[in-house]
Amino acid sequence: AQSVTQPDIHITVSEGASLELRCNYSYGATPYLFWYVQSPGQGLQLLLKYFSGDTLVQGIKGFEAEFKRSQSSFNLRKPSVHWSDAAEYFCAVGAVSPEGTYKYIFGTGTRLKVLA
Amino acid sequence: KAGVTQTPRYLIKTRGQQVTLSCSPISGHRSVSWYQQTPGQGLQFLFEYFSETQRNKGNFPGRFSGRQFSNSRSEMNVSTLELGDSALYLCASSLVGQETQYFGPGTRLLVL
Image (cartoon, rainbow over all chains, first blue to last red; front, side):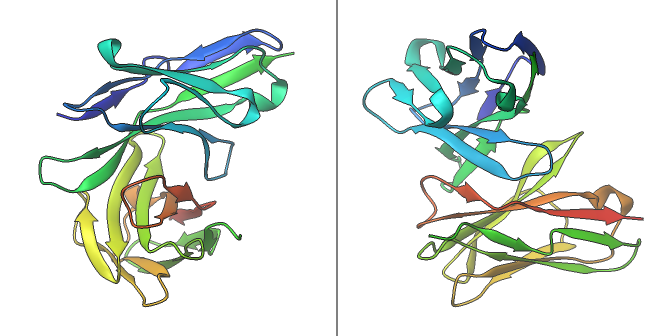
């Protein structure tokens, strides 16, 4: 079955520290991969996406993610976290279902807390 | 270019009532998807509309329905509301559906 796993429900880092949020997916082919961020009470904002090509993708707000096919992973990274990065982060996969329809599958999210 | 807009932003209803939520996609986008977000279940796909036709449907009861108009604006309706329908309802639009989705701010529904 197609699925997305974000193993860390909560992560706390100090401001200025580096960050890595993990995402693993289960899908038979190479899916479209996305990271979104959600601030409290807001919708989801697209941080970055991977469709094909260079496996290291750059996004907005200084974020980057690396697609590793062998590990079925698409981890999100940022070298130096800012207090404004505190939010919930969602990994998503765009994939064709067994029924032949395209759909997004979301992970359960990782809530990031930033310590001053 | 304006983003996805959703109205209303907040809504309070009582059990048994029905509710209609509206979504206006980004100009030029023809696909609109709806999601329900709750603390317990996370983000769950409701349905997708493209060219006024429901193209994809999640695993929700028939009380949840939607439609899309010729200008790509979409509405979703929930009838006979239950307490468990309290959630943030998110709408997302994309050009034709099989690529990046852009999300609106959501409508927060509280059922009392």
